Image 1 (tube, rainbow, N blue to C red):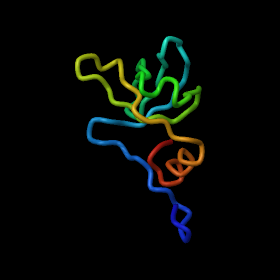
Image 2: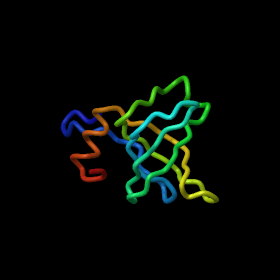
Image 3: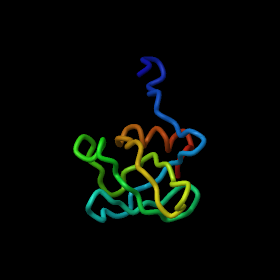
Image 4: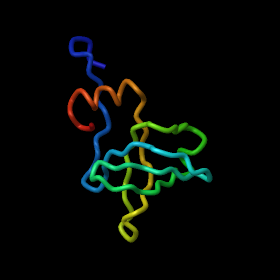
Length: 94
């Protein structure tokens, strides 16, 4: 974190990733997502995140939609509340 600006360098989406909000926990490592492109998708929490990063409703996450099924996506990253506030201030998410 930069002392003078109070800004963190956050992970930003690549060309095939986007921001999403977790709207519902479905169980079994699955979540319902509201994505930046306006679509609702079912998200899968991969095993590398399942027990290390706890994801709750209303969390901001970074997802990668599947190439072969556009209505599903993998959760790649979760932003904590301070990082989500910074993303809102900078205009990246609503």
